[in-house]
Image (tube, rainbow, N blue to C red; front, top):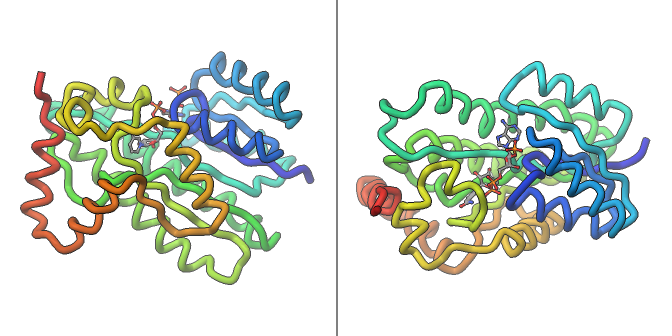
Length: 259
Ligand SMILES: NC(=O)c1ccc[n+]([C@@H]2O[C@H](COP(=O)([O-])OP(=O)(O)OC[C@H]3O[C@@H](n4cnc5c(N)ncnc54)[C@H](OP(=O)(O)O)[C@@H]3O)[C@@H](O)[C@H]2O)c1
């Protein structure tokens, strides 16, 4: 069967850049997100620029039945690379945030990622080749008040992927988690934290193409984890040896809206 890379959240930001890198290296791609028009534009770009096949599968990954339909739509190909990138956040007091949205965040950031990985991984292991790239976050290294659910979902992604990478040793399949800090995408306005100190003051907002490039290289090298940028690496190391009360307070001050 023909080999493909499946990218979730390919309609914007980091996922779109990852799809470009995969296609540039000659990989056929399955582009997944809710916005069909954006996916179609990207598919035409990739097909004409890199001469690969780009399939568009519009899908609300937060919906279990829609995930079934997605997997049925790719049952005729070998998905040798799975990029679980789709995700979103929210900002505010947890108990005041929209309840459906908070649960939907867990369904997308955690459940969909687990579901797609669990259902696509056995065939990769059987073939003795494959890559899983999950987009976690530096948010996963400590609790994050005002973005409580989001930080917790990313703690799951970071932990899940590193443990999976260990289990996969010797199978020919690798798992990598990419942990960016703030990135200039639609994420911050959708999460409502574009007015937080993290995005307005940190001075360390990265470009999605740079993050995608580093994540992609780490995936090719089979690294279990990549933390992007010197400042984030330092913060990640510090969080391992600092009292959780301190790292929680720092995250709270970064997430609080300042205008
Ligand atoms: N930007 C940052 O500061 C930052 C930092 C660390 C980690 N991350 C992580 O990076 C990943 C990519 O985010 P980004 O920064 O590139 O943000 P983005 O530009 O908002 O992209 C998010 C992508 O997820 C898709 N998506 C959202 N809900 C979906 C759903 N229910 N079903 C299917 N697709 C869905 C969106 O497409 P549709 O709207 O078309 O569905 C979009 O393609 C996320 O996991 C995010 O948590 C971001």
